[in-house]
Length: 219
Image (tube, rainbow, N blue to C red; front, top):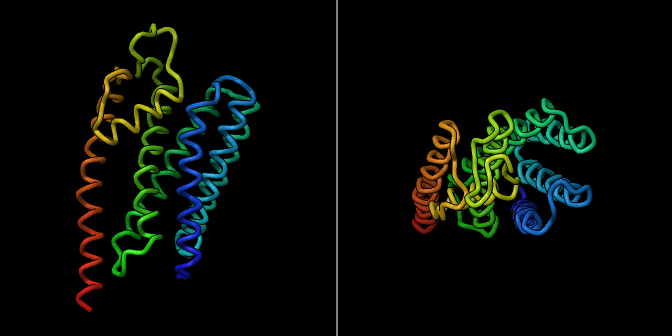
């Protein structure tokens, strides 16, 4: 594997993830320009994640296919936001982010020195897990409306994508301010699962990086 290219792709993915998270805080939802900007930013993230896996031949094809399906569904949903298109959109986004997360997790456990690319990958994986659960939460809210509620708002007001993304990130970090709540049983169980994922992520990835560094030092 070309280490230089891998480090560059990892940095590109990290920057695209941060840009998407920041952009989601400022753009208006249900507005053609805001939705278009978010979709474009997510497109860049999907491309960056695909490039991150492009040097692994066994992962290149499935990553490209999943990214292509997700990008096509996002484009169709932007112009024709039908219910089934919305469900398929969130489903394939969740599958793609889950696939990339598993692939990055396996890469972090490989022996070798702790490079900048590996550190970038560590941060990327953490943020991708947040996006994975965000897509799952959005899928649940689409299929079972009212599964999540933002305090201070009526249930009939619904919940925004930004609120679900925010819920995913604070749940992953086990921070939990309590201003966005899972209401339905599937939503509660998945929120709890994400909190467990966040705790185990820190313990497992740190242990694997320390083991990789120790094996390099002992050589």
